[in-house]
Amino acid sequence: MSESNSSTLESARSDEYEESDTDEVLIRDMKLLNVRPARPNRRFAVPSSVKAKMASTTWDTDLDHHNTFFATDGSNAADKANNVHLEEIRTTPLFSAGVLANIPKRKAEPGKAPADVLPQYGLLAKVLSTYDGKKDEDVDDFLGPTPSNLVNAFGEPIEVEGPKPVKKPEDKRLFVNMNAPWSAFICGSQGSGKSHTLSCMLENALISSRLGKLPHRLAGMVFHYDKFTGFSSTQICEAAYLSSCDIPVKILVSPSNLWRMQRAYESLPGFPKDAKKPVVVPLLLHEKQLNVERMMKLMAVDEKDGKMALYMESVCRILRSMAMKSQNASGINFADFTRRLELENFNDSQNAMLKTRLELLKSFMYLPGTAGTANAPLKKPDFADTKKGRETERKWYMEEDRRQRAQIAKSGIWSFEPGSLTIVDLSCPFVDESAACAMFNICLALFLEDRQKAGRIVALDEAHKFMTATSSSSQFTESLLSVIRQQRHLATRIIIATQEPTISPALLDLSSMTIVHRFTSPSWLTALKSHLAGVSIEREVSKRDVAKIFKQIVNLEAGEALLFSPSAMTGPDKDAGLEDLKMQKLGLGYVKVRVRQRLTADGGRSILAA
Image 1: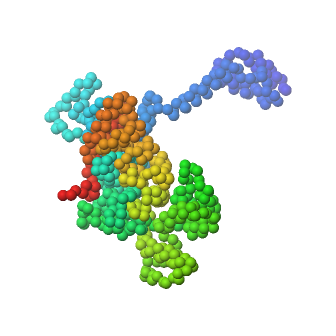
Image 2: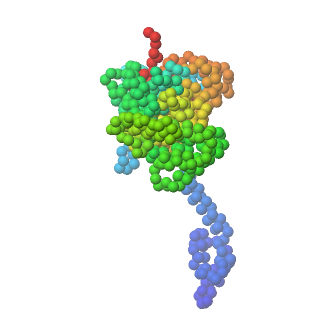
């Protein structure tokens, strides 16, 4: 080492513990003097006081950076809070006119036009009164402040110079948000207005009118079933009347009941003569629309609370083998599946159960290789009265059945355009509730496949008629629950209309809104109490208050309802500042509403004797 370097090092050692003008100079000098030592020399280590200050500086820097991710006092924080409030408003299922009047347009990004917070909505009802769970509240509290009742900071009324303005009627409108996904549960006795409310919601999703804004129409599907339908009478779905307003409505029915359903929907009571009637077509599936998952649901491989029967294990094994064989192919080879089942050594009881499911699927299938519609009816040949002759005759009848289905088949029944409505009505003497739910499950999956063209709205009309205690019904309920849990990602809205609120407590728990029309059964209120926020709070406060709510429900007129929706927006928050966009939520309260009249023809009126 040179003399100059040695003297420099000695100087550094003598000044090591002296305080310098700044810590930065000390650190810099020490780095310059410590030139690549073979071993770390503790004599040249950074003093502990400097280390502490460096650590404190890093801590403060991280703290400042982390605080930028939280809204605090200041204009920037206010903007972030308003963005959060705007997002809540954008996804609310229901909102009042006061919310609509106080929501400005979002600030546009550079080069982009401003976007509405509520771009799609429709008028649903008129607010009659509101309740906070303890006492009645003034309607103005629900709708927000109006110019006629403005006060200053001291609570004194504000005098307006000049002539006093004419007091306008109170704005009691309630809108449903058709831009964000939600789920609705509608219950009530027959004739109370359930199907009417459901139809009004469908109108808001499918029809562009002055009752709201609908730049992007949705595609709808309604499930309907009536187990009391026979050959001489049919119960139609009231949603079919939406075709009276030029909405394309197609009705998928059981092929075995096609002619009678066509007659029923061609003679709709009260339907305008010059309006376009719905198109009734048979529900027929192609092999490409069947996959392993749908086949497993149809074959009910998970019956009896997860305890799979032995023969169902063979069915599952066959489906698993077919899935491995056709990795890149769409659909399933139905003939191959049935052939593999025949090779299994099932006993008579097992074969009978499998045959029931297979025959159900065959009755709704258009199999490949079927003769076209142009062929004339085939004349039945004479068959020998032998075992072989009877087997040949049986196969002839099966081929004739396939040919008849090919003749009535229509193309394009599984296309769902924006603004169109598809009704799946499986009312048929040969289709029970379990079979209907199994087919509904397949139709729901097909409906949700192509959602890029338009958002979806799914409705169950008179759900109590087919949502019964069967395995297929449980599977259909699980599919609906899965859709509701993922509704934000599936862009789907769910409406369930039923007389009995006891069909599925889980559906009640996950619903964004519950609309209760008139009913007189105390057991129904018992079912609602533990699933509705407003009613459950009443139960905890006083049994007398619960009786008061039940009295309100019993005294509801047709078309009136109690509406529960904790996330519904009721108006500007009174405690927020003038520039704050925070809105008040309905929360534990509820409102009494009167549903608006329909745009389309009303087919739900009772048929009287005179």
